[in-house]
Image 1 (cartoon, rainbow, N blue to C red):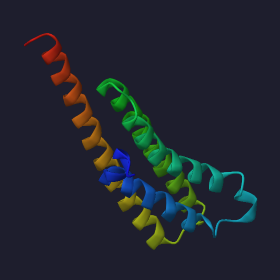
Image 2 (image 1 turned 135 degrees about the vertical axis):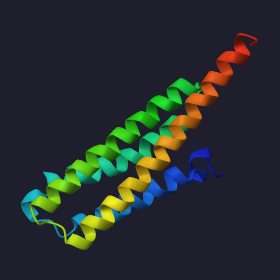
Image 3 (image 1 turned 60 degrees about the vertical axis):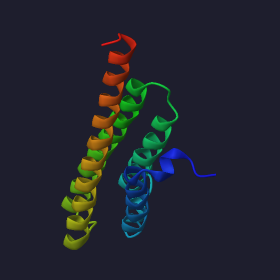
Image 4 (image 1 turned 120 degrees about the vertical axis):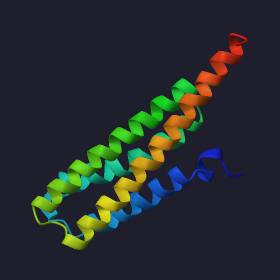
Length: 130
């Protein structure tokens, strides 16, 4: 069985972003294992996890709420990427690639959230017979 979230490009890209983050943080200093490495990995997994969890919610408002959390985790990851770059834990190429992946992810999540909010508004109009 394929679940609905697995069909979403937004989730598929988030999954790829998480894998990329895991690989990119492999070279971080060992003393960062429980610091920035862990923080970036958790944030990247949170992006995909909240997209998936949101699809299980019944109302468009709840679905959009989880997309908002996912978007916030993406921005958190961008912050962590910037700090990792400031600390020279990433090559310039990896930093640029990471920013591009994160930008794409924010656009996908914003589109998903907008779709969910429109669905919720249409449901309200139908409920009110307008």
